[in-house]
Amino acid sequence: MNPAPEGHGAGATSPRPRVGLLGTGPWAHRTHAPALTAHTGSDFAGVWGRRPEAAAELARTHGVKVYEDPDELFADCDVAAFALPPDVQAPLAERAAAAGCHLLLDKPVATTPAQARSVADAATRHGVASVVFLTLRFAEPTAGWVTEQAARSGWYTASAHWLGAVFPPDGAPSAYAESPWRKTKGGLWDVGPHALSVLIPVLGEVTAITAARGPSDLVQLALRHASGAASTAVLSLGAPRAAAGVGLELRGAEGVFALPDWSDVPGAYGRALDALLTAARTGVPDPRDARFGARLTEILAEAEGQLG
Image 1 (cartoon, rainbow, N blue to C red):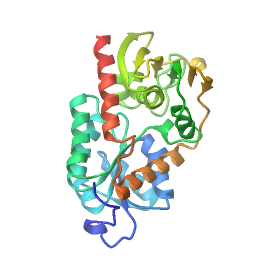
Image 2 (cartoon, one colour):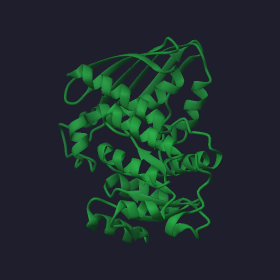
Image 3 (cartoon, rainbow, N blue to C red):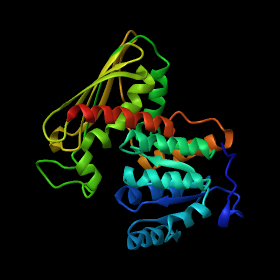
């Protein structure tokens, strides 16, 4: 793995790592770009997007360069941050790794196991660090809560639900509804990674999975874990507004523990960048890296295959 980035290409004179953002949608506007602008340990270098006018607007808002070509961004930057659909993100992430950029990825890394593993392999092959931005693993107090629960033993069961109203049956869709991949893949792929990102570090690797459909895009997962514990996850982007919400409860020999509320998603994104820079500096892979992201894709693909 590369040492701490000191700038390469056109950014070689910068004493701090330069971060380039790929993507211009609502998530980039609301989370990625504000967090990169506010980050005190790096320089937000610029933006590339598939829609040049949107990239120019986002770049103007944050006073950074607009890139017309992603490879130009990779040559200028030490870190490539992605706010793109998964199957657009994956091949670009491989190109970024080949250019020597550390990877700050969005979830899911890809929607096929082969493509997700290819991203993880590229990071390893080119010696770059990677982190997947899984909100609950970087937001506080949830990130600390997960660490605390992972240190316990004697787990019996867990139940998770992430019911979004992105495409509600009883009102206007959310700002994230204009997303073709979310419409196609639904809650299983969009919010499933969040639930799994908590269940796996606490209960252990998923060893068996059963998936069933419900109303709208709702999917229910029944999971068995390496610890012997069983868990369930109910996932949707099409919940009625009054039914929407997020929760996760763990039950075991030490008691019952509920996931705390969280906020400040841009702050969580900044901590994800901190984790990436630490992995780059130390050479120690982060547990939320592209390899973990590839495992999440494998689990989700297995579930999707059962749904027919």
